[in-house]
Amino acid sequence: MSASPVFIAAEVVEKFLKFPELIQQLERALANFSHGAEGGVVQPLRTIVPVAKYNGFLGVMPAYSAADDSLTTKVVTFYEGGTSSDLPSHQSTVLLFDPRNGILKAVIDGNVITDRRTAAVSAVATKLLKPALSEVLCILGSGAQARSHYEAFTEMFTFKEVRIWSRSRKNAEMFASSMKGAIRVCDSTREAVTGADVIITVTMATKPVLFGEWVKSGAHVNAVGACRPDWRELDDELMKSCVLYVDSREAASHESGDILQSGAAIFAELGEVVNGTKPALTEKTTVFKSLGMAIEDTVSAKLVFDSWSSSTESE
Ligand SMILES: NC(=O)c1ccc[n+]([C@@H]2O[C@H](COP(=O)([O-])OP(=O)(O)OC[C@H]3O[C@@H](n4cnc5c(N)ncnc54)[C@H](O)[C@@H]3O)[C@@H](O)[C@H]2O)c1
Ligand SMILES: O=C(O)[C@@H]1CCCCN1
Image 1: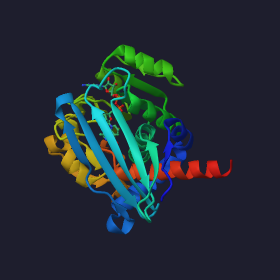
Image 2: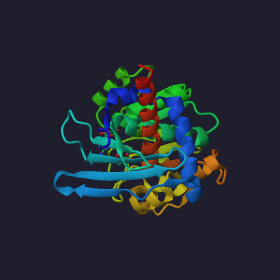
Image 3: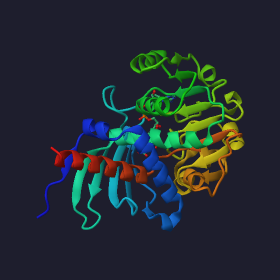
Image 4: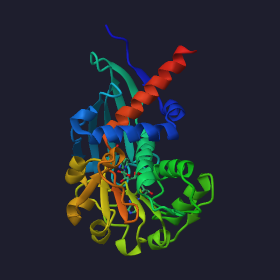
């Protein structure tokens, strides 16, 4: 009989999933993904089950990485407007299997993985696509992803000014006072975005909050929200005028409302830029449309599991 799976809690994931290393690992995973079969990534389009009665969704995100020899599936739920004020709007668990025999080895808290791996992938996009002189960072939204993006971006880059906008000024102020470093709280999206070199949209909006007319020419946008075909964060003007990068062409053309509804053309996958098969057009206005990929969870979960295993062996 196989041993029972271990449970790895959020505090343990926090301890082992750290930014510079996670960013490097995910850059490699993006490259493998965009190499096709040769890259050894098996990742079907995720399954999403709408729970319409409660404005919720359940997603199942399996993947295997031959390079990491890691087999996982994430199960994630997300609720429009959250379920109640004290629950996160997104809740997830990652199941890690032994790829040799299918034994379930670990059940890992997925919330920290989701927050950090998403920010890490946006950091890869920003490293490759931001304008040469990037002084002002703007974050739209003040939830879990806003926090992980702020942490990753202030660790990896140097900005002269960081701005935040949220629907309620109180939330934006709470965000600013809970993070290390100076953050300017803005009263309107337009104020936050005007003149920004790097913009991150991390909202649960279903209609555009970021408009092309406000975006500085040459800026880079990480568009992280709007993961449903009928949800938007960016307007048509921005989508049609930018050079558009995505994590996965397949996912983007099935799930992204910003792409499907605007009819914008995809220029490249981020992994193709890492591989050098598509250029990083840093002098143009660029958008990285992130939907989130299972392979990011697979690589992150392996990192956590291996670090946890080594720490228990040395005890
Ligand atoms: N691309 C990825 O890999 C990935 C991964 C996880 C989450 N996400 C997406 O990122 C977004 C943020 O996730 P989160 O975990 O931070 O959620 P969260 O619930 O913690 O925060 C959501 C933020 O959006 C704001 N918001 C809600 N409705 C809004 C509206 N109509 N207009 C403007 N702002 C609004 C909230 O006030 C809050 O500041 C979501 O859309 C989520 O689905 C993407
Ligand atoms: O990639 C993810 O983990 C999330 C799941 C929920 C919807 C947005 N993307």
